[in-house]
Image 1 (cartoon, rainbow, N blue to C red):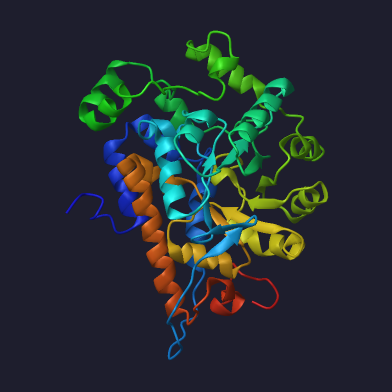
Image 2: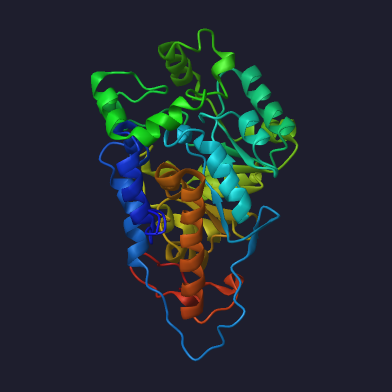
Length: 390
């Protein structure tokens, strides 16, 4: 039995990734801003929701298939954009994209990915999503959008909650960079994790390939990092959705919504779907968990647009709780990153299969046969769920 066969939960996958991935890159995924309170709340608040068990009902011929933004999916999830994914494992974005394609769910490539838009397009056969950060250099943003169109990306995910970078203490303490600095400490890490090191020696993808060609002296990481940190646009506003949507010519999914008023603004300005997200607790520490605010955002705009969510999904049960509270689907960030770190493409496939099995079994024990029928009647009202009718 292989080590991935012994992985039964996403928590197991996380532990395996921790053993295989150098500390600075594992900590990049397993961290939040400041006290990490919001990061922890994203997971913890799911535990406050209880299911209603039903018995003596027909559980045969169950289906967890659905659609997201008009596309059929094997279960209502997509991968969330994760920066530095190619530092969890060599060519990590390509590996995750292949696994997502084979499973039948959308893959989302981050602007701050190690593998470029073209790298992923050349190594997959189906369209994927591209996550866009709006930067001050609008000519460069336009070129990014055009590259996504040329790669046949089927949707843009416009991230609105990173106009200024939240402070993540672990990254600062670790001195994280891509490519990593070859300090004595890091060399020792590679000696302890030779599989990771050998994989990295086998690829030339070690830095931010979506932006490297645009920056003078891109081989000098300090120049690249300085350009990146100065480029996120603090003047980003709702009107930007229109020109981005016109330039792309396809669906634009607005990510980073935590407030009903912001949800309404996104819809009014043309968002084709929204993602209830606090950036995995990596931006505003002290913000509420996404599952906590999901019901009121669904109330505000759920009849007008598709409401997706991310943050804290670590099991099929979490997925079903989100669906019960009105989400059309969820995005998986750390769950996928742990899979990449633990086993590359096979690790992501295993993570998705774990969620599929957990979702299917839980659906049966709720007394449901179709995931589209999951709703408020499948959970108990409690201190977290105060929406009228729950």
